[in-house]
Length: 96
Image 1 (tube, rainbow, N blue to C red):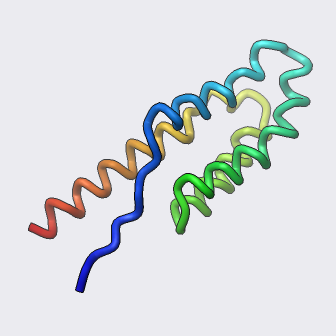
Image 2 (cartoon, rainbow, N blue to C red):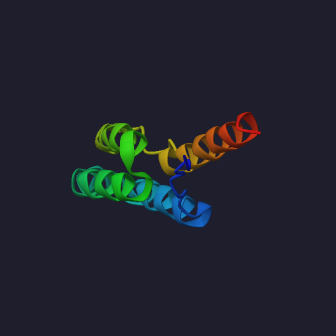
């Protein structure tokens, strides 16, 4: 039986998505309004990039993180990329 590994998105795309999320800090009042628009878009992109249970949980977390003021600094995409790489690395080592 062949194991199926999901593809991890490119690290640079994850960093770019986190930078876009932090861009709302550039314009103080307008930034928080833009978060209301960016939060659902970011959550959908997150789900599409990571998929499965990681994408579902992360998409919901990303939505909440982008929506609440003062939490935009959390690099959700990049942290998930790192966690997924570590998890895949451990699965590959344990299958040897």
